[in-house]
Image (cartoon, rainbow over all chains, first blue to last red; front, side):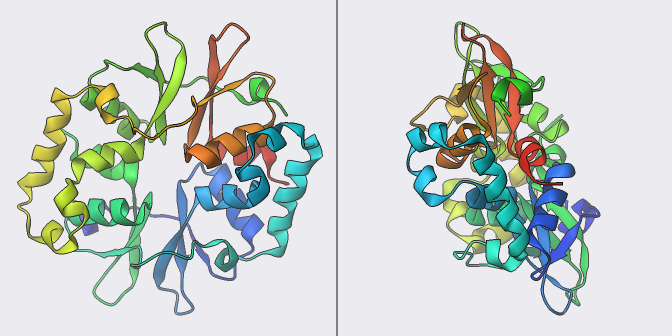
Amino acid sequence: MLAGELAVDYPTVKLDTNALVAARLLASERLPGLVVLDDNGEPRTVLPAFQVLRFVVPAYIQADRGLARVVDAKYIGQMCATLADKQVGDLLPAKRTRPLVVHADDTAMEIAQLMEQEHSPVVAVVDGDGRMLGAITLTQLLDRILPG
Amino acid sequence: MLAGELAVDYPTVKLDTNALVAARLLASERLPGLVVLDDNGEPRTVLPAFQVLRFVVPAYIQADRGLARVVDAKYIGQMCATLADKQVGDLLPAKRTRPLVVHADDTAMEIAQLMEQEHSPVVAVVDGDGRMLGAITLTQLLDRILPG
């Protein structure tokens, strides 16, 4: 079972896509992440849904459960609204070491290893010219490899 | 917006549920995690889909991308099959510091803070007696709190 057989159509965004637009796409489609295209239109990385959450919960609340309880109910809406002033590139994690891309002839274990190492719930699949064929999510991969 | 209003019906497993059965449920329903009930039938924690992946990719391959390429194609099937000899309790991460449970009157920010701190894509919602009302996923939460 190779990546080319596992790839399915998947939504993409660009580095300069508005962060709120991207977040709404993730949320409404219940996606674990979005594939991010570079300036050449080739898939490069993934914006995980968790990264959006990180901007909704400010650092001083991440570390203090008590503060989460006392902030005004409007506050989370205000945090969400700040996404409108950001781009997808502003939300990406800094620590990626590898592109979140596999080639059509990569194996299921190579896909699983990349997801595991980079803790990404989605990877893009490209052909020999770097063109995107689709993407594979963690649960789609498990669905294909688990014994029935 | 309180947890009780956000909760939706959600599948659960027990600590002694067969790990392969749980993994197939995650995979076929495309769930980010499963709510795990304790021996009293009350929600306690969550089995994230990523934990299943950790058992599919053995430690010596997690650290070595080259090995992922050379293992035989049957190998990933063998790793998946070992789940049949495990229970959900065997797959849970060791490092949780808080139960992945919120109360019906907890706020959206408290839910977001718990998901962020414990890096869990799902939390269970309970009433005052500890009975499960449902669960909230990360993308469902984002869908409700993001401005339209």
